[in-house]
Amino acid sequence: MATKRDYYEILGLTKSATTAEIKAAYRKLALAWHPDRNKAANAHEKFKEINEAYAVLSDPKKKETYDQFGHAAFQPGAGGFGGQPGQGPFGGGFRQGPFQYYYSTNGDQGSNPFGGGEDFFDPFEIFEQFFGGGFSARGGRGARHRESYELSIDFMDAVKGATREIHVPRGEAGDGSVKKTIKIPAGVETGSRIRFDDFDIVLEVKPSREYKREGNDLIVEHEITFSQAALGAIVDVPTIDGPLKIRIQPGVQPGTLIRLHGKGVPHVRGSGRGDEYVRIQLHVPTRLTHRQKELLEELERG
Image 1 (cartoon, rainbow, N blue to C red):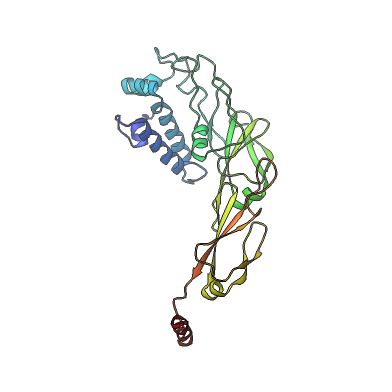
Image 2 (tube, rainbow, N blue to C red):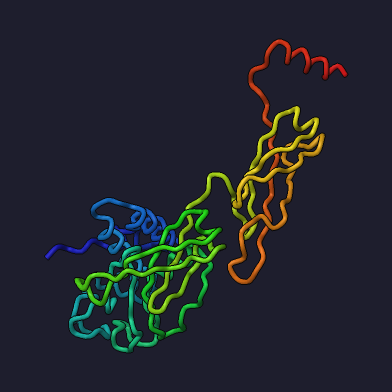
């Protein structure tokens, strides 16, 4: 039987690590080895190992026991720790879904190796903290955790809505999967949770190269020429609905924000949309013809 790695070694820490240092190390490693992000052959096992280490070291009582007894305290049938024969410290253990590892437990007293009444560690909850937000609240202490999966979607699918087909595990390992069609409402963002009949989806939205999102508002940078800034112009700017012509007022200054009312992201709850802000940037040419230089010099002289 292979020897289990030291939990501190897994997270790159020492026994003197603080709670904040443990959480920071976990966050960095979990995001780096998440199977949806890391395509290495051993990513699944590494991710599981990292979560297992964090489940113990993030809990002061479990950490104290681990520091004193090591892995022996968590072996199946270990006496003196409140465990049941044949169970490890995490009851049901980690299961692999199509998007991320998740942990399920019914919260029954006796499955907790340190006694009843406390919630189990759930890797999904950690990712929800990282990404924030969500459509539905999780159950209280002792509530049954629903199966949860992470799904990555494109920026435009998030702001305009989309339909996706996914495969969800059916029953226990080896039972195959079942295809589900999910509808993603317009306006979701990273961390939004969508609740279905028997599972939840947490969304990660890929960033856009063109738009910066702030809540339901969008910001887009738009470059204009010196002559357009000085004289004014009609220019095309991008919106999520397609190009839109706007008027640039003569004498506009770099950094000016032009508000396009109602051209932002739809409100995921209720009606209405945010706004789009076009930030004006001035394009300064690096090369000028002799005639262009003469004209600029003449302009400078007034």
